[in-house]
Amino acid sequence: MTLDWNHFTPWASLAGGIVLGLASAIFILMNGRILGISGIVGGLLRPRRGDLAWRLLFVLGMLAAPLLYMAVVGPVPARIDAGWGTLVVAGLLVGVGTRYGAGCTSGHGVCGLSRLSPRSGVATLAFMGAGFVTVYLVRHALA
Image (tube, rainbow, N blue to C red; front, side, top):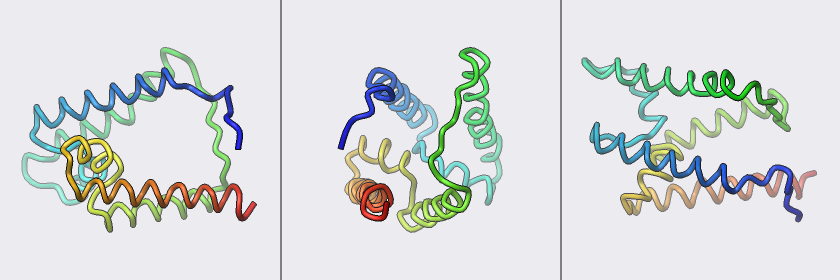
């Protein structure tokens, strides 16, 4: 196995992790809620009184952020090494895993682990392990 040094971005990744951690901490301190994307979006599908506006604004912010980035930096070419069928199946599997695991990677992996939640530790190990096995199978064993 070799490292793709052209796409190795430790400083950008570190900065992104710090921003994500700060955003999660600020969100839980200000709202008393976990910053789990699946829970926030899921709440839009079954809205409760007084709970819709902040969820919509959050999702709009997630959609606007890349557009703002592109306006400042310029377009960034996307490279996805998969076909539409693979993307659809992967998306469905992530959705099923999110429901089965009672949360998503941001909820368990960022917020849950920072709260030392045992359930989030198990969930994070499960989805990281599944990701490692899937990449190995698709990129090495079945290639």
